[in-house]
Length: 303
Image (cartoon, rainbow, N blue to C red; front, side):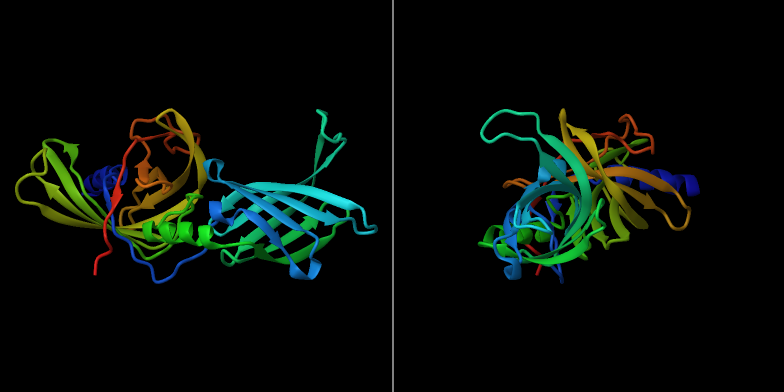
């Protein structure tokens, strides 16, 4: 029985695949997206500030920090870069030197500190920083300079689909419906899957068939699994490198564990959802390194 349960869980985990999404959210958390790029500043120190650039393809945020030295009025310029995780980003701070105005030159780039940037909304954020050489630390409350409309439009779409440009796992208390037919071997198959999730659990209700093409009478099966999102990693999708989630599904009763990738891209009119290929090469931790190419379309929210 335990072996059968493990096989069924594996088949369902690999089969998070097909087409339709219906999601509802009581909360709309902030997710860093393309619309968060632009100018940010602290009104109390007007004349200083940040230009942010969000790069969804590599899950990176780049911050250009325009400020002044501690002991003089000389201008200082820092570059900070790091990985995005939902509403925040861990950044390394670099300082450039030896460039020449409007001329090609060998520019030195030196790491001088670290920062943590966290967004409360499309309008406000906070940056904590520490510099290695001086030990100087601080915390800056930032406001958006300019419109937040683009950020809010992207955020609304991301929340509806329970995904983000950064591919970070988001707890929206959402309900997803996957439609399709997956052959399981031995002349059996399963069809529609109803998936409800939180940030730490997944409940699957699956229509199982004793035929290879999802015809005949369906037997409904319910699986309650623990969900652990570990981090993001680079994976191949149709020959292109994308940033995907690494996550673990575990059956609490048997301890059976599935290591999987899940990639979601909600840019454009037709969002893309895909998961790791079953017979893909695995990384050192046992996660697949290649993704299927699958598509879904959104349907109206259920009333």
